[in-house]
Image (cartoon, rainbow, N blue to C red; front, side, top):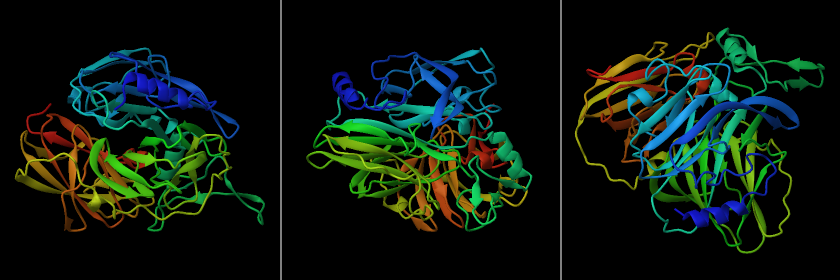
Length: 478
């Protein structure tokens, strides 16, 4: 990681955008704990139309939280909005009382209230923080949380954080009510049939061909669409580390590097042996660190984030020298669905002991019929216990997707290793979120080393709020 002086110099190079959130590049490198986090609101311009959304200001500034590994994580969150909220530290492993999940880890934060968080910081990497209450995450109550390695990096490189969102002008509660009512849902900018001359509603009952059940108005990369993308100023012959966070509520993405080839060097904040490529999958809630080397001379290189099974896309532009920047449409070529072909190729840098597995649990992902009830093991849940564990033991979980949609499954309070896909065994990456595609079977292992009753759920926000959220309880845990 860079020194503070290096970060400051590089940060100046990335401040060319006009947006308040024009740069997420190590925006809080000079801050020291405790961090003051205000949950508030802001007005966002989406293709010329104003939208009131949530915001997380850190020490009075946007752009997320940047810290270094070593000291305890220390923050105070103040709720300055007119409704309850609670913040989850996605990627960190606090004690259960500080995990930020209503109903499992403590009471909500009411308007005007503050809560302090202090716990050992055991994880470096690209993480994020977001509301875990209702559908607030859809309204952009989320921000990056970057924990850099202590000391200087072996690689002198420019860093840039990219936060992805799917955006709707509609009230998410209305969307969920339509889905659960078995009806239809359309975006604010509804499709128009030029022959019929009227707006058409898009049916949302899940079918095997569908990859998304929500119609969105725009895709955002650092709060901007491709109509006015963020342009990141780069040094000539520059080395980049992109920290990419899929903070979307319901959209899996493809990272498309275009003319560039990159190296995937970390997933979900955990270092892996580099994997070269131009196209990488990024499911909801996952993170990807990609290292790039830009060609010599002036140039402009789009980095696109393309929604699976759709033609919608967002992106940023890396620009060196005096190169011109071409216009890129917000809709491109439709993409394929995300698959798990990359997962067996990922190898963790961290070596884990080959401890025996105490027990294997099978969890089926179920539901999704016309009433939009999702569940685990055939039951719509909300914090119900799936199974119990004992501290100090290793467990294996086999997830089988029996539904017509893919599910990004997230375990709180722990990291797990992906060890199997559709019967193929391997020692894969260490993650906190893994995609389970339609008809697929994914096997993970985790060590029970953080007592409590922990959420285990699909990170598709509308699925989670419709029953696909269980819990794993330690024996004797409160």
